[in-house]
Image (tube, rainbow, N blue to C red):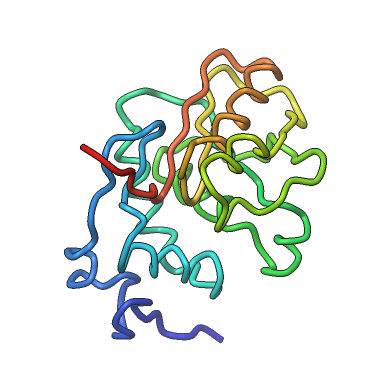
Length: 190
């Protein structure tokens, strides 16, 4: 059975987010990795819908915007910075994988699982900048990546997770690795 889609911000039937709500979303400022939205206000609620409330209906819209953000440089494949196995089991899916599939669809390239988390890293949510940088996740490439890889994640704060993912793909044989996120935590200052 298919249920009608609702905007996760205003609950209207239709696209997620609806055009009216999408207009009010603040774009991300330049940061360590490109991102579509500033992770504040309604954009934060939108990402939380995807991440914590099974709001996968927002993935096509976010994926299209992420693909437009990185479309100027070609890639051979898309992958994602995987969440921990425990969080994936608890949610029933990996939100970064859902976004990566949407981005790959818009770019017209394959989406493949190329990374695995190693060791026990704590969730980055709610941690200070120093904690994020000193206890970043550690990834290893699970198969040889193609030459040009795009790594997708839901939120970038310090860039520690995406940096670790890019480093693992380069160590695994990729020639060029880029990254993009759906949202970026705003930084203080200009």
